[in-house]
Length: 423
Ligand code: AMP
Ligand code: GLY
Image (tube, rainbow, N blue to C red; front, side, top):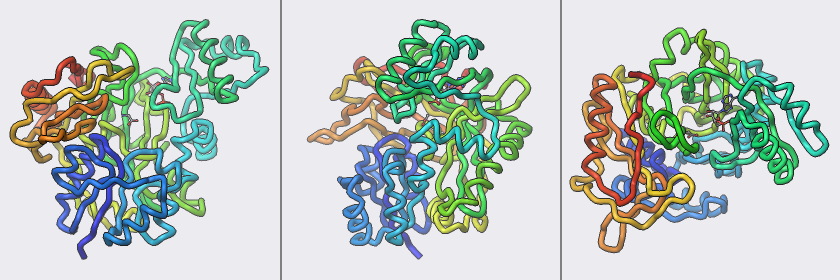
């Protein structure tokens, strides 16, 4: 039976989801809200007030949409899946109670402790806490301090500077009432995306993001400047440890709840020198830009896969993965991440954005809009990713950078070392 699908979101991640979904043999119509210039080329962009669940449900009913795929975390924390599922519309993404795994770091820690998964030790500091005593106790340099709010990547400070640590702790307590001090985990980071339902889970090939703005992992944190998949740091042995020590215990725990986890769980990992993984963070959605390199690796009908997860039938879907490599590089506006300059034209996209596939390169538009005369305009910090999937990472990297070299945007910047840890 053909299905109409709505994707919520506007980034490169949502473009990658749309591009994957639209190639499904079982899709009829694809909608994206609000979408971007890229999703407009493969789906119908619609302006919906996502916070108004009644109107979203009405739109879905009027357009016979039976599957909603939620890209970003905010609507999930706001309960969009609770409302849609209650109205009989499949929503891929957890309901609000478990979306809190991303919405609240304190809640996430509580669940990790209950499920018994390895993670950093944490202390909650509030007004009256002896900050200096705790800084001495967590003397393992550097200190890791986390605000417990959705802060768009700006809520975490990792520092060896005691005064900076004290200032950030005090600022966070003043703003939020409390703050979390964590032990430092050393090693290499990787991301594992896991599709889950009540009865089973499916680990997708692991990937690696590049969170700092500059080459060599320098400069401020960003949403992510590029990614590749699979990440060689996640060897078969590490993969099976992640499955048995983290994913399975989390899934077992979720399955005891009234409302299980249905959607994709993003496990942010730190892998130490012995290949032992710990959880740095959970997100309740696909990573951006990890999604752009992970979705193309999946050899399955995404409509069928996501629908099955919403209906606790994930175990009945056969999924294979490409054994090749995908990589993507983010093109960012001047001033990103602090104050991106928007409104400048993006030139060089002559033959469209391309189609994801093996031995291809393509563009995943993100903060990219169409002007009045169809010209393409940078409308966000992360403007697009150039993505490629090839026989090996070397070829994929060359291809993605080749694609990037064809584009121009005044003042734009990008990292030239995406994938450096793998090489
Ligand atoms: P989070 O928002 O929790 O993912 O933190 C943002 C970034 O800070 C992570 O991607 C890590 O690079 C770093 N980080 C967070 N927690 C820790 C930790 N306990 N030890 C080391 N690095 C961390
Ligand atoms: N790329 C990191 C994230 O999506 O949170």
